[in-house]
Image 1 (spheres, rainbow, N blue to C red):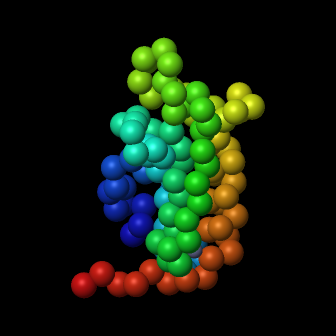
Image 2: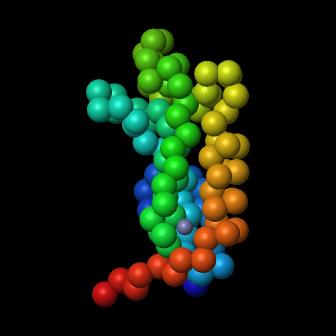
Length: 102
Ligand SMILES: [Zn+2]
């Protein structure tokens, strides 16, 4: 059922909880004055818990004018593994059942 459902725009990874809710990783601008993504934002649609993995200054500053830059954090590592790790571990333990939509 869930696998056949179209993913919302910007969702780059999705995890399923035992309760049948999804935990979605999206990319989004983390600052009001930029249009390009600067962080991974994770939302659990079961319990509505959220988590942010900021990509750091390089993603925000965009000093080379190349638009969205790779999702590297301050140490030069990609923030995606950390985002996936949070989403994975949350999805494994979250027991909240998503509220049915009318
Ligand atoms: Zn949850």
